[in-house]
Image (cartoon, rainbow, N blue to C red; front, side, top):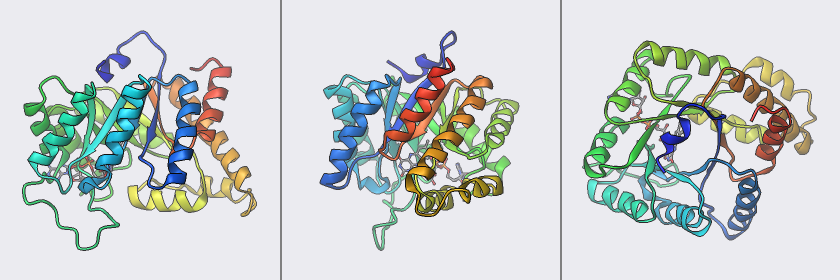
Length: 294
Ligand SMILES: Cc1cc2nc3c(=O)[nH]c(=O)nc-3n(C[C@H](O)[C@H](O)[C@H](O)COP(=O)(O)OP(=O)(O)OC[C@H]3O[C@@H](n4cnc5c(N)ncnc54)[C@H](O)[C@@H]3O)c2cc1C
């Protein structure tokens, strides 16, 4: 099924969970447990990240296969082209197609942080818009999506310029957008409004990132440019530094109220950045379902 069919009118908002391939045996065991618990929530789809430069090529493929073929679940693989040439790109995407994948989120990716002296492939694409054109021409029936940044991409010249490039991604074949997370919905609402104003009319699904730990929150927000508001810092300061469970519970409470507001706004879906964990997503979704919001 093409993922965009999920967002055609007349149904409640979709639920989806982002996963990444495990890097260690222990992480793989935890990931399996998380998948089982998240599957019990009957999400509309799972997404699977792809390490730019091909670092998780095998791991991403295996995870997509496990979910799609092994468990019969709906899967949206991401594909990051950074550092890969056309031949490798075709190889990876063809291997997904052979698993029955018919939707894919195409991103550019970034230079891998853990590979010293990395040099991009000379024929690699500089931007996701070029990758979308390429994939559209090679994989006719593949439903393609793109990444969007409510607060602007970290390297963007300006938010308006970033939005123009997002529009180019849609012109070049993106039929849906999954947004990076923000801790303040005002960014997402403003982003959607600006998208509609310049004629971006595809579904835009907000990303939701519950707080798992302060360190993780700071690190990831630093990488992707999500603002940690003073209000959020003040709430975090009410939890003792060593109270890990208390912080996760606060994260669930905050993300639940964010989701409530997003749903009241009529979003087409909620996309959870799970970090391969299930507890927070479970807590949030159970609360939203108990209020009949989902
Ligand atoms: C939902 C989601 C999923 C993601 N999944 C992954 C993943 O699986 N693996 C991974 O490695 N990374 C992933 N990322 C991160 C992403 O790869 C990085 O944010 C990357 O820096 C940008 O990717 P992009 O596709 O948005 O790039 P682009 O759209 O190419 O944008 C990158 C920058 O270039 C500018 N730009 C865009 N087009 C042009 C153009 N034609 N000319 C000049 N400038 C331009 C933009 O304003 C932006 O600043 C994901 C991000 C999101 C939001």
